[in-house]
Length: 113
Length: 117
Picture 1 (cartoon, rainbow over the protein chains, first blue to last red):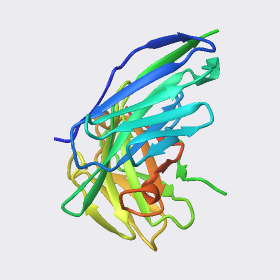
Picture 2 (picture 1 turned 120 degrees about the horizontal axis):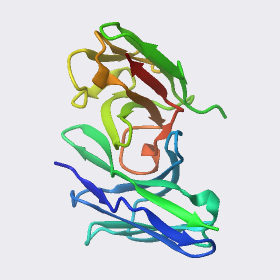
Picture 3 (picture 1 turned 135 degrees about the vertical axis):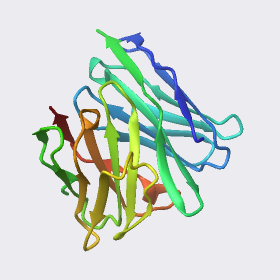
Picture 4 (picture 1 turned 180 degrees about the horizontal axis):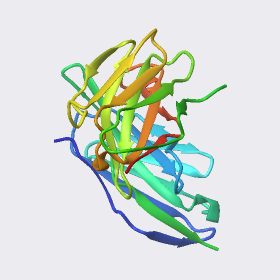
């Protein structure tokens, strides 16, 4: 059973602070990891992807991957109220010719003005 | 460029009727995926296509669900004899290819909200 675990939150941070979102996954062989943002009533939007150990930065977002610990995280610097959304961690599992993106249940982030 | 489009955006149907949901992927994307998201629930994988073939149908909840893709582009998800538990948002996504790495990045359409009364 391929699993992706996230803390459901809600995670509340003050405006301007760093928000830290965490995710663990079960399949040690996974190679592709994604973070999606989903506003209420909208579809998921891809915001970060990461494929190798270490950090990847894009603007205010930093994704971190540690394959040995089977751990992925997303840091949002200088959090804004517009960052308030549910953040979904997704892991691409492959095997026996099949590829399946498995999502965590999401962490709800609230940025307080 | 144009993103993934889905139609209809909303569908209300009576229990027992058949429905068809349509997805038009991003131009040039060979892979297409269907997911379902029930109220307050996570994203549930249904099926994916590589070109016109569907290597993995394991996520389809029952034999009332089927999907096809023709011409390597548009896909239709059909639900026969709808039940109230089929009520959900049906999401379609596409990616450049089915593979590990950047080509696998999936981009979602706006979804179809299905309500079965």
